[in-house]
Length: 171
Image (cartoon, rainbow, N blue to C red; front, side, top):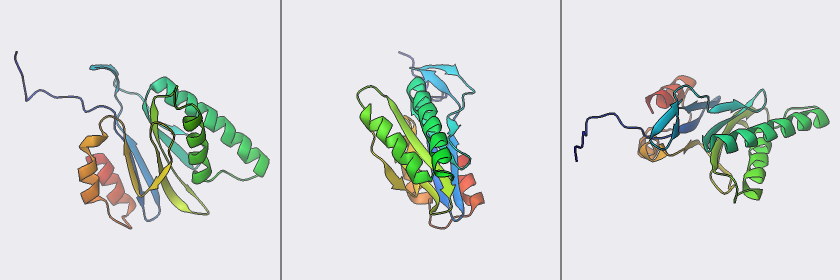
């Protein structure tokens, strides 16, 4: 068996959300894989839900896309009924409700991030099973285990937008 330890290796999907002193920065890799095979090298894993709220998607692409589509529709209805945009917390809780109520059928982990006039920039992690956790930064996907140590050490309170962007690009 020939092991080439210098060969590049896939670290899986990585999605990241980081808060800074004026908002949030979201990031994701662009590979879509099927096992060890990279099926698409230019997929978009960040989806806009409203003008001010986005979701990073990992896991089953079909599952995460349908959840995003349903939530986008419900948030549009919410905005029409209330006459104002939904908050980041409302968006995250709507995703949580869909993920939890369908936990036996969905294989997706999501990070919701955005800014609203009530609470400013917020990040919510929603892993498999539908728990919602507000965090200063969230990391998800099968490649996330490589980054937890880095972000535990590198993340700090009141970062500038530029500092947050550099950390996401570095990751």
